[in-house]
Image (spheres, rainbow, N blue to C red):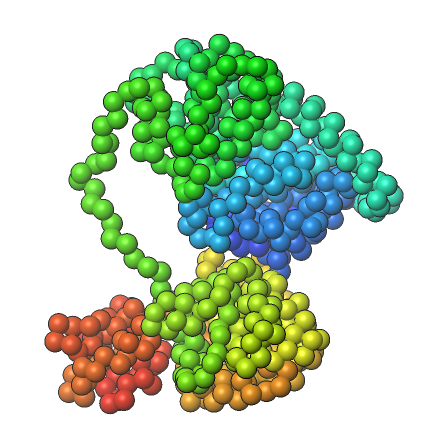
Length: 593
């Protein structure tokens, strides 16, 4: 897999420290490093991306090769130290792997990290295949040490999760860190920043010339028409050109910033028109337009700005096939395989037995008939916004549930505010919001959904689990004690499947002056052995459908006769449906057992 290729490439390059925060589609990179660690590499799931960037920076200050992994929205969290690192610089190679998510398949935004690279004046490498990702991460370490700056590697979802056969070297480069040397360069001051800004701007010109000779950028083919591409769109274009047996000039861009301008000039020379293929924003397209304009070239450059390719979403072979066929004036038959059926759409739902469903339901019952707003956060529990729960009214970014609730409360003081946040997200960016609410004496209820893992990204450990990426057992951070330590005086820890106690806790918390907190503690179903499933007693069931309408558990199936059946393969016997049923028709073992 592309993520595994990046990890193995970093190991070959002699990386010594790898930090990150889990986020699809980047997660498997750090996990692969840990899996293949011979003990010489320090790995950690950091509390958030900012912390990961700063830990890696310290290692790079000390002359070690370090790598940070995250998804595109994680770069927003890490942007503060990153922007300053541009002025401070590094001694050891520092590679920042930022996985972009066109679609988006599992993200809040479709932001394009290539813009961030330009904004920060940092080189960015854009792999088009897993094989190239393996090579690029090694080149990125060398480049970082050569120019004394971090280097960004920007794979997208299909590069991260595509699979390919790669010849992986067994040898590993040895890089012995020189250690941290005291020097005023490591202390950022305005005058230093001014000087470094001038230097980095000059460096962009030099890097543009270097990249014009890079093997990651190349021109091939001939003719009056040209195709330029980057990332996975380039790979699709190569397949289409081969399938259509075309002889056309092509320009592969593996280093979108600083742009290889000299090589681009050679590509544009003599062409009548160019089609640019790239996911997300028109980064390559705009660079070519700038070069054509500055050189006075009469050439049509087509892409996103002209409507020839879309701005949003992932590219596909079929999309690229149509774009190239239209551009070259070739017939564009329907290439979809009729033997492959269209998959039905399926909305994401909370798993059967998920404790979050019970937590949401308890608060919903407690607030029935009252004016209440339920702010949500990033994680599995975002799915609590779906019917029939309808318990997530807002979702902005990591940790925002607690802060957004405070803003709403200031405008609607008569509204009950419940802020839902997961355990991993709480540690990531939730704590400052708690402190802000306590300090400003805001009447909100913080609901920590503690399922003992970072569930949405693949069950990684966090500070509340006591496990580390190095396989050590650390001191478990107690969420209840932490909340009390920052001034939250009313805190209750409740099992959400104990519905009577959970509902009572929510009612009590809602009338507390200042900040109150409920910790709904129950493990994610992935952490427990699957128990014997429950069963619906057909004699007691009155086909009222209340269990279906109230909680929406995917293990519950509505039969043609209006009665409910529990699917044994999905049921985790959480008992929530039983607590909802007014006829006590749910319990015991399934009929199959």
